[in-house]
Image (cartoon, rainbow, N blue to C red; front, side, top):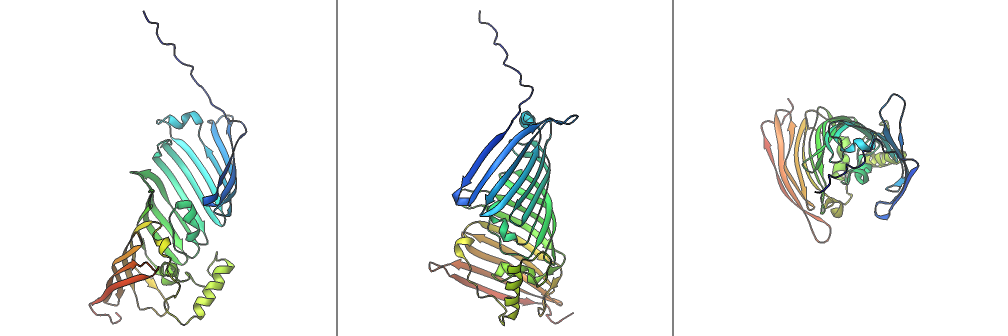
Length: 314
């Protein structure tokens, strides 16, 4: 008669002392060291702490993490606490909350806050190329589901403009996919300059770097309405983007627009605006455009404008 299997040892605690790792990834221009350990503070649950120091995307990076007990990572009945602060160059990120199932990234109740002088600097962190922006600060709820990282209940400022809505990023072997549905109650058109290849923002906005102030001074001195900077087609092909954006009120010196609505899709470098609409007094100006990459790196544009209602000032 076979003997009953002897139950294995029950692990009551798992501790890390003096844990170290060195990460060097040439493609990401990253070289940093990680130190990890466990703590058992009196009267508090056990937790893991870790810190990273070095460079990422060729900029200094510092990160500090406090989590729950290691053995609780697979306990889907006990929320696992997360407290992370990160600085990559001038970009600041904080993440705080809990995960119900941290191994599967499920059951997230996390609040994400990030700020910096330019959203373009987020590209190495999120994996999606973002146009240049003026200084910003944005907060919202972060979770993961259906293969996508979702950033919802977004509320923030972009230069002199407000921004709200949701974003999601779906990682992909070929190209990640960014899907966004955002709006502004009041937008300054100068803050959107980076989305058409120009210099975003206005002079003397708090948080601007010296390089941004110099670029804005050159832009103001230029007699051209639209920028002449070439669009980087390889950068356009780095991700597929689906954006819906609306602005209830527009500020723009010399611009007659009162409101704006845009539906933008970028797939394999091809750009579709369908439509872009501007409110002007009691009327509207709308258009649909298709910009297709060419072998020489240029974009072939095709589109049309249409008017509706009375475009005289209300």
